[in-house]
Length: 451
Image (tube, rainbow, N blue to C red; front, side, top):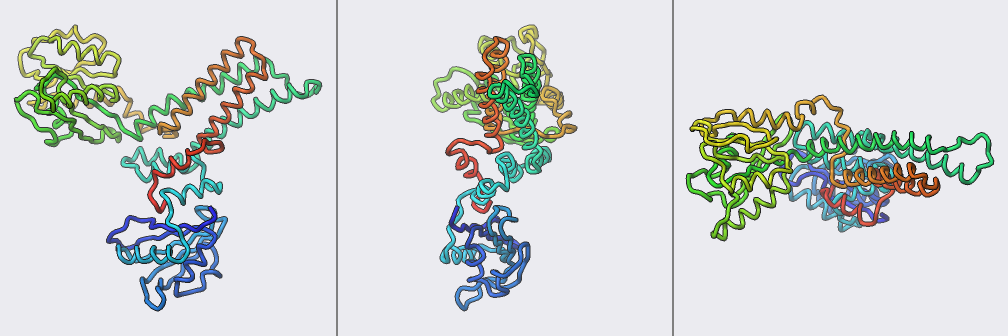
């Protein structure tokens, strides 16, 4: 991090303002060499200065330059932000001049990475900033802000402090057993402390499912035989003609997707090719994609024709969905009912007529009920949400379960202490106190150049 980096921090295009950000030990000196105005090397921190960016004797753009001195800056280094007129040519020219005068083009997310490495942000904060940038709903915004404002980090830090207190007491018991004023760390006391931490970890893991729903939405796969009304249902739910609808079987030969908001949560709908045996190569590819989607979705809307008895193909579909969260949709309720409802054991059933737009709203009500979407509006949004975070918490729960078993089996306390130390380190990976090689590059590479 000894070099000075520069990048455009705003979307390049026609706009009122573009910002070029520079960070590093030479940031002020390099910009000052290009700036006609006050002497930036003598400027106070958190000040803005009017002038021009120059290429020798040529004025490139009229700018406002902001100066932020180390350590009280975003990255912890000296930062200069050049506010230029929006426009591709002038913005790129300023960046070109910076690169020709000693700056290096920043890597994706490198400003934020430096903020992390300099102790200005922890890893949960950094990831939450990324989530905030990409937030598409109000709930996503609220959840992201819990991370940006350190509430998530404080939750994890509190857990680590409890673990550290246990580890410290055990070490004192092992190394200084002769001290009379030291708390004797008994099996019963350890059982009590482990139970408290396990409850907190289990709660975090359970609520992380809610966080994932807020962040990623709910992926809903619409499955059924050809010509049962899948495409029509997709169109009815998103209220637009996204999928082609005909009476010809196998019209949908590839995946058709649509999305909309339900109680502030994104519903990602996937209309699949009908699950059936076919000699058509193109349709076969669509069927294979449908089978794969069956494994990945959060919810299945399984469509059946209410005017016909269940076929072996229908029963095979039911078998494939038996371990998935499923709503049975009996379509064509405007026709005479021929289907046996007893075939759908322990499944939610809704009778609809997509053609007449009847009971479509009941499907949405049921989805809202199954995922407690209305209750989410009253939550505090302090959730972990991405796969890295959730994976770590799952491993933490596994370790605490192993500790509990070991303690119940009267395992030596110094062996249990090793697991407690591993748990403490693993929780540290969430906030970046401990991390594996390559993790930072993976996380920060997802950001834009100027972030």
